Amino acid sequence: MSKGHDWKKLATESQVVAAGRPEKKPDGALNPAIALNSTFHEGGPIGYGRYGNEAWSALEEAISVLEGGKTLIFSSGMAAISSVFSLLPQGAIIVAAENGYQGTTTMLKKMHEAKKLEVRFVNLPNTDEVLKALPGAQMLYLESPTNPAIEVVDLPVVIAAGKKTGSIVVVDSTLATPMVQNPLALGADIALHSVTKYLSGHSDILLGCVVTNDESIFERVEQARRYGGAIPGPFEAWIALRGLRTFALRMQRSQENAMELAKRLEKDPRVLRVRYPGLASDPYHERAKSFMKGFGAMISFEVKADIAQIDKMCNSSTLITNATSLGGVESIWERRRRWATESHTIPENLIRFSVGIENVDDLWSDIQSCFLAAKIN
Image (cartoon, rainbow, N blue to C red):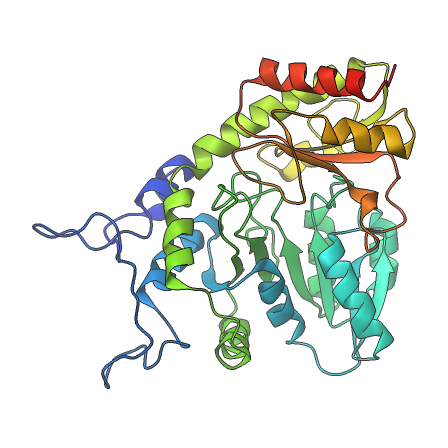
């Protein structure tokens, strides 16, 4: 793959364009090929299609450059998360978010009920609560900003505390992305992403990844992928790498839009609360500024209306899509408590808003039309 770059000297905007390219040679391809092979001749480093693929390697190289570690990609974000939990022995203690991503919390609740793990659910932004839960834990599973509450965890402090007590420290950094924070540089053992979201950015594939600098962890997660079978398709890996080329531009525009919309929503009398760490009024603003390189493109806001009105509001949009996802070029929102598995700590009137790259005034006009359609005054 691509050589000759001192990646640490390049900005993220350059890294996403240059990483994961084939070696330069006369008439050589600029882009890696889609390697459609399940079988390989004997004697090479891959061996079999469940163990590796050239298209996987290109994407893994690119993400590794962004996060500063070795990457393994998976068939989905949940597959990546499952591989991380497979590092723990039966009955191990794990500290995790009480109101994080509902896919993760649902899985952990089921594992806790089955006594496969002992899960200590905590309010992650409450640093004291996290520290009190750490003694005896084998894993500290962090998420920042949290999904969908958009709360910022004091990563430098809790990562250091987790390492001191001997925990494997994992950070789901999907909402932040490598544009905003690098968990491994902050001391985490594992950085995790749903590649489905911002990294690929076009709402057209499902992938996940695990990134680590610990060789032992890397080998164990690779074995989990190899024998668990949660492998990505080469076409999906190729599509994700193509999407990654514009990641920095997409994220920059989405963040700019998010900041502007958060400011406007904060002034709207129909909105009870705006959750966005870029706002000076946000309780996590100063914490975010202390170690993050930006504030991301996710907003959650609580509307002064009943559930039926809020559902009507979300369904009335013409530019914003009412759907369950985030991180694409298009703006997406939804009322999160419509899902039975969402944490009951999340308010019924909260809308999670993944801000896209559209014209910000068009987005604002759509929001205003939705308020009117739902008769929210």
